[in-house]
Length: 300
Image (cartoon, rainbow, N blue to C red; front, side, top):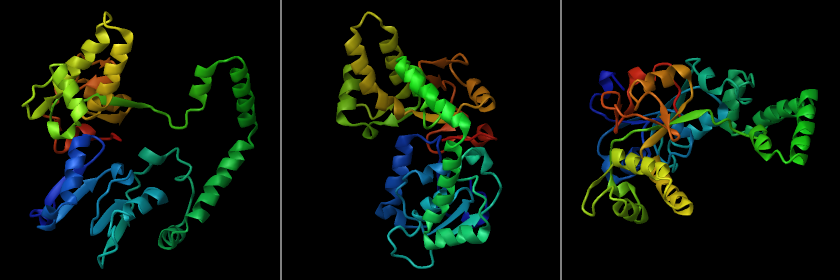
């Protein structure tokens, strides 16, 4: 992770999209606790830090991407304005195309001086004026006008499924990966634990919830067609957030999915997940997916 000898005595954490939600919560709780005041800490994050991670750090280093993301990370440094000499340092590895290639915000060609001015003065209106100008130009395109008439025709013909596809704001081209490791019971609310106990997944005194048992419960509910339909739907609704404690999302890229399939159950997707049955050696609860698997991959 951080191999520089200058950081050898620092406590280190990884917060990436492949790290499960319970582990992320553990890290955040630690960083906000009194224990974190004893010694220096290094936190290595992916874009997940831009999505509301509630931490307060002294200094930040970030690969330049889009102006919104820079501001988001800046909000995680000296969050309470109680420290001096806190800085956000941006560098440019030219790697942002992997994530932001199609983003209109990335397509704004802003010189470094203006970029710095927007961040320093918090003048995001001038930046978004340029973004909205591009959107307005696209809306005036004849092809866009044709699409609108197509939508109107589809609505008149009650083709709502097709309309839903066309109006999708964010393309969900991702795959959910389920990791059947053990997760501490403290990461589940009481109603979830009662459900798992009633379903024989855990006993009353167990300290961990087994991911493999949760998966068995999930598949049994789906496959048991003899159960009443409403009851199955209710059980799956309760089980949904529990499944989320064991899963992460990855872009549906053929190369990276091909790598992960080598460690999955039967090299296939099952009931909406890639079941990472043979995760030992490539995945850990503390750090998520290992670096050699992540080569040239973008994880959420």
